[in-house]
Image (cartoon, rainbow, N blue to C red; front, side, top):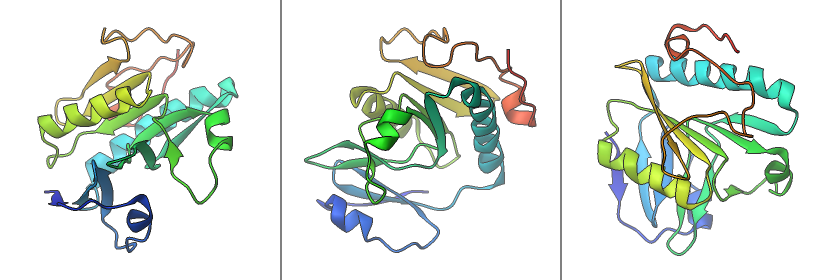
Length: 181
């Protein structure tokens, strides 16, 4: 279960948090502390990462990350850490090594844990999209399903220009296979 500390925490204060194994996010200035993910969550996040990485090696324009930090909003500050994310190499180059990525990734992937509430997930999706994400995937290991949200609100995954030619069976994300179309 996540712990929320009601503060008006700054990005600088957030950056100085101890590396204690817990995952921290900042939601409108409030510190959220979550325990480390369990094995199923980690395996599914890794499968998503590998599937995207395999495709993006061919792309040459985008990079995929696990657990990168994104400064989605300032005043009050919101820093989120999607399980997997995709962003352009231009966005990567525009960020100093000691800073959080500003704005949202092009694609944010949240792998649902038992500790995640529906309300928290919807809030994260809205925050990613409001900060400029083109897509958000919410991956449900328990039901082996994926909900896709896009910036237009259509919830229809087409590949578009972000991942042309990308294809993966949803079931492969949960059993470790990584076939691409």
